[in-house]
Length: 218
Image (cartoon, rainbow, N blue to C red):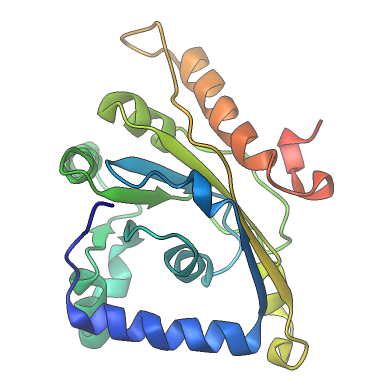
């Protein structure tokens, strides 16, 4: 299995988080046998709560790198934790050049054999229902030429409720089979990007309860 060096600080924080998640949640993970033991790939998942990235890190046997909004890095302690964990900042309203730089950085990370996680919806869905995906994940998967691993997170919408920890909400993380996106168009027109994005999102939706699949139901 590929090993990724991560500094001790984030590993200690993650170990504490694992204990807390086991105490506060009825947490179930299925499908971890689908996670590739070696090589680069992109994890794509639906996004409901701020806890979702931690759940992915705790649920998968490979260390995952994320993109995070640059505002989070302004706090000295949190910024150090994020950088030590290999997470890199992204400007939400960045220029075209900034977006290209982020894409280049992501491709370099994947070329080094690491694992990158993305939430294709772009923003959290507090209802727990899936939202329409954006094209960034599909573009990166095509450019980098790496497999995509779909993951569905169900139940973290309950964490928005008052005193949720008293109920020990049931949270399920389901890992699907890896797949590759294929395109016959080198320039990837908008219609082709839309098709690829829908294909990617349907792989996530298939792992979700039918009533939570949003625009990808049926």
